[in-house]
Image 1: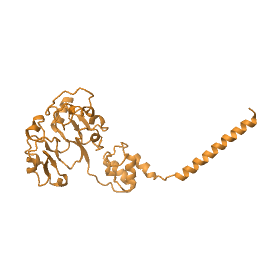
Image 2: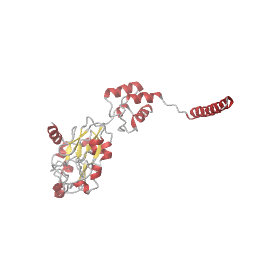
Image 3: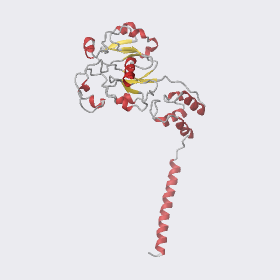
Image 4: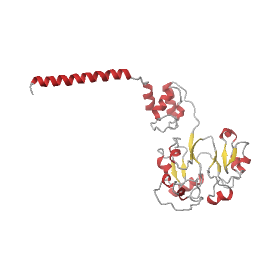
Length: 283
């Protein structure tokens, strides 16, 4: 190949590169979107867990919400108070306030109190066991205790008790909702810590039938409804249901006459007896 052919080839390639480079530069200018540099700065100040507990799609989404005044720093449940103050100071806004939420389990029926009607043999996950005769547990609505929630929690906020009941540490829980999503029995709910009156049962059986398969089941007796403030508790399909729109009138007295302890007044962590027993078991 002579020198002229080489120079022609180089010129053609250079021309093609110049044309495409120019097109890319024009496209960049035409489609360029200005991004507020504060979004990047605030995102770097956030924990980076991308848990979604704030209601936004990850920490970057929360940062955009802060910049757009659609959220306050207190809306991040993972940040410490000092970190929230730092973000607020950077943006020149109030820290704000948020009603902190934690995951609550609506079942107290561990293997020491709930009847197992069959032995499940298969993949040891709740998701796999649930479709197979409810995983061997007599209560159709009860916790299977195989620890899917513990495995999915990125904050080590859930441990399984010695009798296979999930125990949530409210100090570690960020209300990310992963346990809510993974539970095939829909037993986890995210509740404000101010809602302390909790029915720890989902069974729709009543009376002796309910108690025959779980010692801590709600029997639908109605004593809690009678002892609570008017309109606070209603018995629906054999199950006590708390109307949290009247939460300011809730009191521990509503739990006093519950024959099984299905309804509880929760200060801090649920299931203190199981928690203490599990500490002894682990140690």
